[in-house]
Image (tube, rainbow, N blue to C red; front, side, top):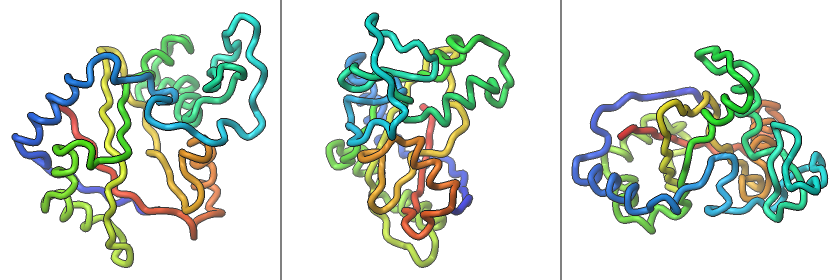
Amino acid sequence: MLNEAAVLTDLIDEPTFRELRALVRQLGADGYALNTNDLRSYTTEHEHIGEAVPMPADGQCADVFMVPSVKRTECILPGRIDIGQHYVTTGGIESLRESAPALTSRALSFGKYMFDPSEQPAVERLFGSERFQAAARSICPIDKPHLAPFQFNFILQVPGQTVPMHVDGIYFWGATRFQFPQWLLAVMLFSNLFAERFIHQVIASDCF
């Protein structure tokens, strides 16, 4: 796994910026979901690997680190429990000393995940721009020059919220967020037992 990074100014040109900002507003309140599990954007074939427990009669998961399954019949670990538990346990890089519910609310930003960039002209144009392509190639391993854009996210935060430090969604050949919980993919990555199936990614972030 590479740790290369590049800092660029004005990666997004002004016309594309305006289009993206308009799209953020156009999606409206119904277009975003809490980032525990964005069930509107995709589903995971195997929601758990055996840790699920039956949903209590009151419909509430008793464990602070568990959430309802898609059908609300079980309580399962959220897809990014690896991020959430670390943040709630440590208080993040600011070492906040707050209750678990307070820290959880800070980490539950709102997101819209798009897995077909071609659906949005502004997104497709950004990924196809020479500046973006050149930046990506400067980070890609020399023996892996192929670029295939596959995901674009909008993350919204209200004052007091944050995105805890984390490793972004991990992909392997045959194992992705569409098959398994993302926390399991993180375990697979750091186990170093599946390195030959790891898919390298270039990830770009911007704020506006």
